[in-house]
Each structure stands twice: as C-alpha cells, then as structure tokens.
Length: 340
Length: 296
Image (cartoon, rainbow over all chains, first blue to last red; front, side, top):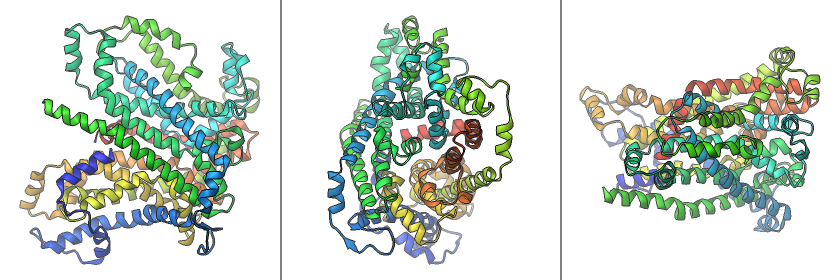
C-alpha cells in the first residue's frame, strides 16, 4: 500500500525532488511570521519546518538512528557498555549462519509463514463470504470476531497457556465431546508445540483477515452479480468468476502483512514458551533467538547482527513479493482503466 | 488452522447448507448461515470468555471442572485485584503511556501529513519516502540499539522511554493513512479561506483539523490500542515493577501467583477491559480506517 501512495506523490511532484530532506529539520529555528497574503518563500519554508520538524526529529532519532546503529554494532563483539571497540568484521554473521539453533528458528519462521497463509487465507475467505450475506446482527458479529485481534498478546498468551496445560480447559472440552484420547502435552511436546502455536496464531489473527476481506467484498459493485444472475450464473459460478478475481488485491495485501508478521513473530512465543523453552519445544523464531542470544546473553554485537539478518530476510522477501505479486495489481488497474 | 481443529463437529454441517443457497449472493441467508456464524463467533470469543468467567470461580472449581461455569459466582478474585495498589499503579502507567503516545502521534502526524499533502516543495517525495520506509523497520529490528539509546538518554524505567519510541514507530502508518485524507480536502476550500484572509496556518487550524477528524480518530485508536498492548519495548525499557505497564504486569502476576489460577484470570481480564471498551466504542472507525488504508 505504501508503494502505490509513493508513486502517487512521485507523479505529482517536480522531478528535482529527492535531494535535501534535512532542510526541513535544520531550519526549524527560523522565525515564522504570519502574513495576511501568501508570504514570501521563507515564510512557507518556516511553516514546513515548523510542521514537519518535530515528527522528523522524533522519527529519525528513534527509528532511523537505531536501525543504522544495529548495522554498525553488528560488526563488533560488544557487551553493551562504552563504545564498541572490538571490531570482528563478519564474525558475528558467520557465527549466525553456522549456528544450528538459528537454522531451527529460521525453519520455524518459514513454517509459520507458509502455514499462516495456507490456514488463514481460505478459511478467512469462506467466513467472509458467509458473513457477507444479509443477516441479523451482522455488525455485532463483525465486532466479536475482531476481539481476539484487539486483545493483547500477553493476555492471549497467558489465557491460552492456562487453557492448554495438561488437565486444563482445552483437554476438558475434548473429553466432553468424546475426543479425550487425543490429548497430548500441547505446549511442551516438540511434535505438537508448533501446531499449538499455529492454532493460537490463527485464532488471534484470522479476524483481521476476515475484516479486510469483508471490506474488499463490499467494494465489489453489486451490478456485476445482478448481471451474472440474469445470465443464469449459479452462486458458485459467481464466487469463482467475479468475487475471487476482484478480491485479488485485498488478498495479496493481506498476505503481504501476514508474511511480514510471521517473520517478525516474537511476543506470543516469548510469552507462552518463555525465554529458554522455545528452542526445545520447537517454537523458537528469529526474534526470540535474537533476544535470547543478544540481550539476555549480554552479546549486544551478536544480537544486532541477528537483527540485521532478520531485517535483510524480511526486506528481500518483501521486495520479491512486491516485484512479482503486488505488481499485478497495478497492471490490472491499468488495463482496467484502458477498457473503460 | 484453529477453526477446524477446535470446531471439528460443526464443519461437516456446512456443506448441505451451501448447496441450498445457490444463486443467493445477496439474498436472505438460511438458518445454517446463522449456525456457522454462531460457531465461528463462539470460537473467537470463547477463550476470552474463559478468562473473564474463570475470574469468577475459585481454584477448587477450576481444578474440579476446568471448563465449567462459575458455581457459585465468586467476586473475591476481582475485588482483591481491584483493591491491590500494584494493579492500579500499572493501570495508570498503561493509561499514561497510551494517552501520551496517542496525543503525540496525532499531533505530530497531522502536522507532518498536512505539509506532505498540501505543500509543494523540493524534497517532499524524499520526505514522504523516508516515513514510508519506516514501515519496513519493525521495532524488532531496532530494539537492541533503541534500548541502548534510551539508556544513554537516562530514560530507563520511565514512561517517556516507551512513549517517545512508540510515537516514532507509529508515525509511518499514521502519515500513510492521513496524507490521502488531507489531500482530498478540495483546493477551493483553501482558496476560499485565503480570500477570507486566513493564511495557510489559519486554514490548517480552522479547516484541516476539523475536516480530518475521522482519519485522526482512526489513527488515534490504532495508536492507543498498539500502545496499550505493547510488550517488547516495555520488556526492554521497564525493569522495576512500579514502572510496569499492564502487559508486563500480567506476566509478572501470572508468574508470581502461578498456583492461584483464578486470581491470574481475574487480573488478566481486568487488564483487557479498557482496550475492549475503547475498541467497541470506535469499532466502525477502525474497520473503516483499515479499509481505507488498504485500498489507498
């Protein structure tokens, strides 16, 4: 979504654009005088500086600067106190790529990424189609399915761990519906823990997917369905030929957000499996690996190198996705425009 | 997927219902629609209900029947949490950081978005791209240097130490939602205001701020809920229990009273109530805002 907006601005501004960004921030001290007419150029510049200055300063200080420093610290062996002096070049990165626990974490991220798309996508589309019909209480349903998304990760993690522990509510419900034999140690058994995590992730985030797709459904003009109905199309034909193709952009944006979220996953795993259990239960992620081997182990240089690796993996996947998947949307929009 | 894993029984039932509904995309929905919707909603709010109802039980009830209803209802857990100083302390820490994060994001975001949307100047594209690039930098990547920066600034264990980074990390989304919003305000309004003698800044305060209110509310709610639920940043910055926000407090409480499940559940459910109330008040705005953002 950021991309298309960026293109908009690109087309509306003069081509000499991307030169001096700092201007706004550095001239922040120049006096701003209110004039009746559109004032001379420096008044406008003062307004620009005054209005964007605070945002730019905060953003650069707390987002850009730390990200740049992460790349810098990643080249040092550093305990986090005083300036880093022990330059080790690419040693941290080599250590990461040789560490099999990092490979495990990476595999878990990959598994979570793929399974989130496979499990949430079709289910969310089916549920959104179902809820898109005229029915009583639809707005109440819309609120309620969004509740898990609003509840914090800590509450989700705490609540689910209590329900899933052996002899907890989850086992009791299984027993009541006659599936008591299926109970396992949901959280600690390495064969099941990552599936348990997938179940909790799906529960927490599927409401978001449903809401997005519902919004996408509502933007499809109903004339299309009326025309199709006149031509004698069945419900399923309409869904396959009209709904799914027109939902494409919404689904691709959702998938993009889901992919990035899967790669960055930290809170739920860290809360449910704690600092040390996630690796043995088979649910560690790159982010929990980073916190465990970086800050908690006191190896700040190493932790920053992990952050850089995590960022580069996300960036490469995001760029590939935008290049090969999201690009279709702009092409589609162009051809659609031509037809009109 | 959780839905099919947990709800094995209702799923087979939905096949016949779909066959019946052929060709009725906008028509009335059959009873099966309600049944499936009911089950799905049940799955979504079941665990939340477990937390809230569990707080009304006592531990012997929970051990005897882990998934049962309160019998008798017991308000002791809730009242003991509500009487504890630490809960209110953490509640007010969460409230302070959420309110100030929201205010900061809204004020700085509207100001910067206004310039990006309506001023023509060299470097505008670059400035916009700078903020948009922030979407690619999640807090996970920056957390270690951020922790060091906050420590050097002497803001450890202070709420300012989480408010400032939260404002910074919420700015990209805010600006991306608000810029198209502000750009949509017709040029004629600005010209009319200029004829009436309002400068660009006067136009900003008298026209832009009121007209952009719906977008502002959306980004404000998103910032409030994100701050209320924020976990990773407080985990790094806040180390003593008096400065904890509720997410850290819930976790500490759950560790400290791990045998007292009922009280943990009561603490947990009380800590989610403000965000839930806030969300239900403004639900339409959030959904509308998200839709706009995705379509934009």
